[in-house]
Image 1 (cartoon, rainbow, N blue to C red):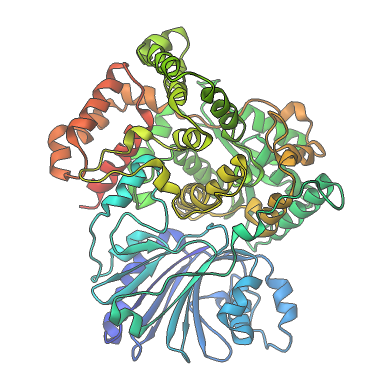
Image 2: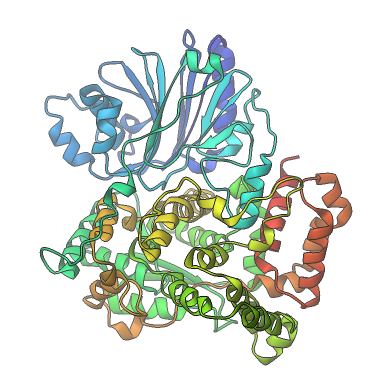
Length: 631
């Protein structure tokens, strides 16, 4: 795992190019603390920079930037290619210098070209490759968006990097907040790609490549990214599974995916929450390991309703792992909040970023690489919305409009604090559920449960409708549940889940790997009949059957909880002063992006307990915290 940066600035001198990429690379030392490197082509105006976290081939032969044997290609890349041994055997006749996957990649470029190589790569990656013959710079990103890559045109220079802070460090960078991206963030809790929070700067979409020449930069018109793989080509579910038993087939496929991702020349372990997804990964790791796998979990022991660490420990004992649980306090979790703006480098408001960082910091004390169960919900239909949304849509469609409005008013008319007096947390759940009563179809229900609809009109002069979040995503011809899963896979998965894990882990120089995002696993899951994934009210049915071969269901079958963060209560309590400062009307007026009166009303209602606006307020606070950190 590493960090990459670079600049394509035709006409710029070699010394300035080198100084620029060194400044960029210095901002992401956390992604690669072991070594660095630069490459400069002064005549072309190209400079590449690299920060290395050595994981495979720890010697200098694995260092980057790396030049191919033909001297034609120079590459910087972040990630791991899990089939590099297979490719090495296929590339007969190469005089290998070392054992790194990077060397295999550049040899493949020599043999098949960049476009011919990308479909052959199995792994997670974000790369930039300079073609000395064609005088072009090509970017590419892995199929599911596990690794990040930002790029943008600024003052005649094409800048790119693993994180936005690297682009900001270059003297050519011009930063203006993109109001449309901000509006989408306030709804979704992340900035949906290909936009970034900055105008003129984008996220490279997953499964695409982009090739840029000096002429493109001079014209200030970059080509569109070109896909080399598309999930839509694989969304053809069978009426029934033809072949071996799907549980056997999935067991074999996941075992191979996990096994490939266990290769490392440094200590390796796994996150273990005790839920279905992480338990499958750990079980398949332990089944292929000659010694106990190191596993890690964190929990807040003073809140038994939110703490799953005891379940994780039970699974670890059954599998025989070397388990490392860590009890953290609510104060420990809150202490992470001031660091989030720098860590995520773009407004990001998925509150599970906090426990993800805590477990990453724990794991980094023992290992350099950790496998994760993230992606299992998106690939195998694990979210409750896939079960509940069709039911809610069907039932609310039968309700007369007057009855629906009356039902909603009867619930939301009672302040959150009153409901919470009956049962802690009941108020926020009832207020959110009441919003479903006024929706008329499954897309409306999905739009409500996906994002914070009360944040749609908060940016001055801009409004984004929930439906606009998915404009151009496609999948409209899919069944209702598949449409939700497809949209999650193309938006929520890369821009929330993958971004969350990457930043939380790389902040402490920990490489994470996600076996569920092996594209062969994804393609297999989409080939299965839907009732193999969701059977009645049971989500991830086929994955549960795999797990039952290794772990008794009694240890894992329970309502999904996770490491809960009671943000709503914290905002009325220990975080209230912090929030008051960020949401003060004078501060909002100086920042000038948000509707001060609307934000003030939301904050007053939430603070008093009359309404629950946790989701949108956390989004606002994460933007304000980020915005202040840019000064």
